[in-house]
Length: 196
Image (tube, rainbow, N blue to C red; front, side):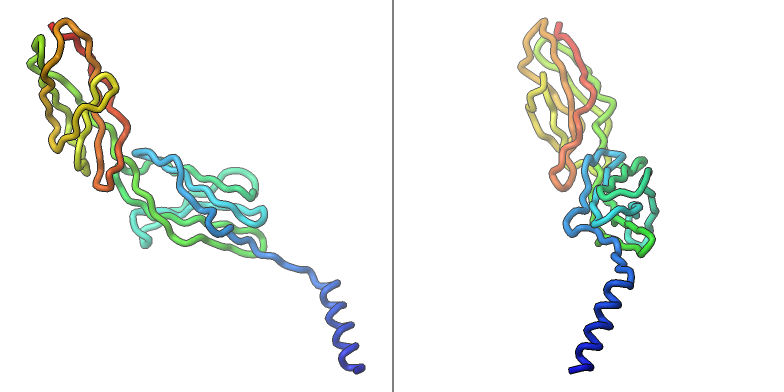
């Protein structure tokens, strides 16, 4: 009985006098990628306490670069990665630390968008038709053609002949790219013309 009381008193003493050290952890499910473009992405995550952070990313888990977060320690973290390649798959993980330790998320991945087609031009403009072509995009599976902001056709090639146009009418044409996952790029700059 005396031994139990002595142990209880000793444990109470330890709990009251020893500092309690908590380690930083990344909140499960909080690591995410947002605002993916053809050349950038933002990685966000949340920690259980104030901490510093960085994102490690690369085209494979074995080829990783680190990009530190700016500013003071925080709970809600965000790092924007710029200078990425169009249509490329990237792996990333969030890393946070404080004075008591370091933690990292699992590795996740995202794929940057394909760039919008460039070089959209027309030839053989007639009162009721026109031929369109644009520069091919590496990684493109299909192209979508938009006439006056309405999608009119989806095709495999980088050429298209518009027919059944009206004479003396203004037209605006744009093209977008579809990648192998069905993800659509932003639309190209508009090509405008008026039929004779």
